[in-house]
Image (tube, rainbow, N blue to C red):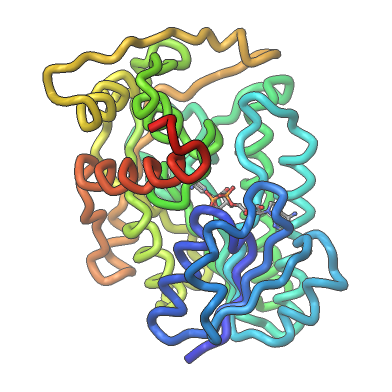
Length: 332
Ligand SMILES: NC(=O)c1ccc[n+]([C@@H]2O[C@H](COP(=O)([O-])OP(=O)(O)OC[C@H]3O[C@@H](n4cnc5c(N)ncnc54)[C@H](O)[C@@H]3O)[C@@H](O)[C@H]2O)c1
């Protein structure tokens, strides 16, 4: 049994990871400031004697240092995600300063640390699949959507600097498009979340841009499997590793699939086109984003994403239906 600090524990990945670690016998200290989530994802954990919850901010050293001093490992997931509609300052602040704080508090005792990064750090590099050594092709600093990729790249650079200068045993997880139970019910979680809500309500599905952009979608259990394997595998120290599924889906096809899983195979969704200009300021989307997962397979015991999109969406729809019914019983 190990004692593990998870930042962002109330969020989508944090709560799923906490459940997986507690279930296998680890002790988890979950930290969250509840800026983006309440305690609803933690209901099964709050009764466990192997889970304790701390309300606090990762940027606050007085909160973080005593926690880092008590644990065998830190998994840093707390973040402010891509500013599609919002502003960039919070993203740069939480992801940049927050990561610095987490890494420096872990460095005092050289605690094993994992930090979450993202497929977005490859930017608009047109050469897919992205290998871990692929270039980050980031657009103009006046396009605020790149602040997320930059904040995560900054966190990655910090991780390697702490490793080199303070001997910190750190790894970086580059997640690709996760979805599943406990995802947020907004665009921040990705298009599948909004499509499911709208489809359950019988409303049109909004496509950003043309809907021709393609993504890979990774069911949450596969991302958690990759994360726990990284935690357990010392050969991942000093490595960034892509974690994700490799099957591409056009966003318009995702919309259709979700609609048909809910309304039947012969039913067609009404689609509305949302121009990027409507987000406020300039926006640049990425057309394709596929991970090269050979490094994960090699270092993490042949890890592959095992849940198909249809299976994963069926589970996610069932969960989201329950969530929406609990909030507004007559709506679904
Ligand atoms: N979900 C994905 O598919 C995906 C893809 C790429 C990268 N990531 C990265 O993985 C990590 C987890 O993502 P997620 O989807 O679970 O996000 P999430 O938004 O569901 O969870 C993040 C949690 O962090 C908390 N938080 C935010 N600011 C905080 C602060 N200053 N102090 C303490 N807690 C704070 C929020 O309240 C929230 O509960 C993030 O770092 C994210 O950038 C996720």
